[in-house]
Image 1 (tube, rainbow, N blue to C red):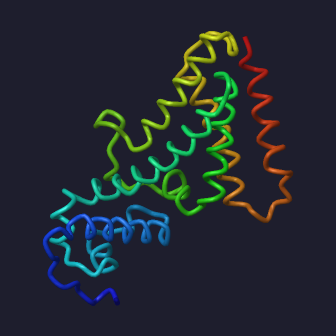
Image 2: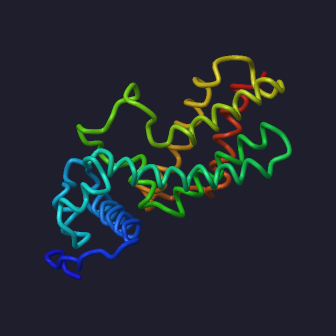
Length: 206
């Protein structure tokens, strides 16, 4: 189906399918452009083979649509991290398992990772004060892991949010660099991640 080709009128019950196709089209455009500002409702409609009014039947505006794209991928990321952390025997192992799962998700899904963390945000993106940002649930689980490590004496007492933010910047730095500079002679990924985690862990130990 070419961008100029329009879909036939949707049958009853096809609404969720159309919504999924709109989200998929928006995601493809985000991957292609790397810039939310370059992705318009009309471009998404053309890519999905629908009219712009069809999109507004499912999303109030572009901000809501792109937030839904990101939220779906953050849900995937949160799921793999929760599964990894859930297999650990203690809070600190759960924390490190979460970090390894984060990096693995990024390397196995580089285009999705780019959408979440390496796409230029548009002016329409809501601020933190305007509601629940996509990905906040996944980050809150990291904060909870840090708090459990502090309570168990694995990490020094402090601000769990601050420590979690620091840990996130570390694993994000590794992941984004591995994606953006694959030609660099990186050491083994597991060894690199283990080294960074070890350095951070020593600095945070109780």
